Image (cartoon, rainbow over all chains, first blue to last red):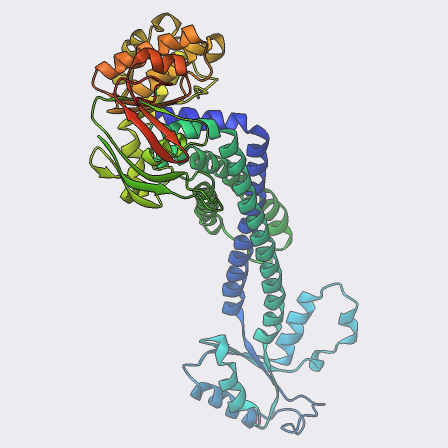
Length: 299
Length: 230
């Protein structure tokens, strides 16, 4: 074993520039892979957080509503009727919360405190509404079909639609990051193959002597494979450091304090990515070097 | 020990065969000179013994093993039963004499103790115990070939193949190498040596197998290079 470790150390030192190139390339591609995984975790987390908060808003008719289900402001009996329909939709409807015009105005005032908009809005301009919480946001259609032609309902709004567009953009970004990561990984594989090929060529004398004294294929190839693996481990470590730094210095120190309404990925979610980086980094380089050696060090 | 049975070898894109219906038997403990001009088939014959090539037809057996049928996985173990010496020594320039010989044991996984024990003994056999910690570049050609011989013999092979081992050496140095090969042969190791060296062949008076255009044209006990025996 000490023989092999000695050989690996020699090989890495002799091939210094290529080794550095390999380490950097592994580090960059794995950082991108890590970033893509991080984004995916971030999107999942935001989805979980916001979908949990999603409500279906059922706006009731106001003084100036024009919907065909409206004849002036909603009457108390219409309101009771809507409430009982909502009650009959259990368990799809988990929770119903009534918001009067005055409540809506109060909320609005808090949200836009200090803004000039406030002066133009009168308390009765905001419609009263039922805020409905569903067991699953995907069940919106059930509620909509039950209520859309009921007298006194002006409109039904699904917040999920708004969120979905936002998530679509995030998914697009994520796919792009993943595509770049895969391209980098591909470049890394080519670089591994070339590095190993150069190393095998530089040591063809040793390997031919090894073969002639009866060294097994494994004994001949292992030092090369381990060299690539050591470079991959160093690269993966750099990538890991990059991901941890991004969490610590960018997400926790900069983004989270300023964007309080967005839930950010937590440490456990970040840490779970790290074994994957090592696995991908070491796995691809070992595979690529083995394939190369099969070709260039025929036994 | 070694048996060639109607062995022919055609390389791709050549018209004449490199080996043409060779029949040859070499017994355990034999010392055989393989002589003939360049391209006569000596190297092809050695390559078949190492399974670097497989015969186009016929069978080559070494120590009861059909070489062509040997699976690739078993080739390394098979090669450990033989030592090989080349014209250009093939020593590792960055390693000392001791380490070069030890290398032959390390790569097949021999223990440190065994290496510490065997290497000095074998260096003494080849007369280089004083130069164990020199680099190959500090040695003469004859000394380098002795190191190569030590490396080939350190694992006690049953068969030693030598491809022009004196090709790069002057006559007096060559004699030293031949004496060493003779000593190794006396331990029971079979030796097959391809050579051009007329003086050495004539001096040693060993079995001669002469090749020409892929055929064996002479197989003579205690022969001389120029003597066709007819």
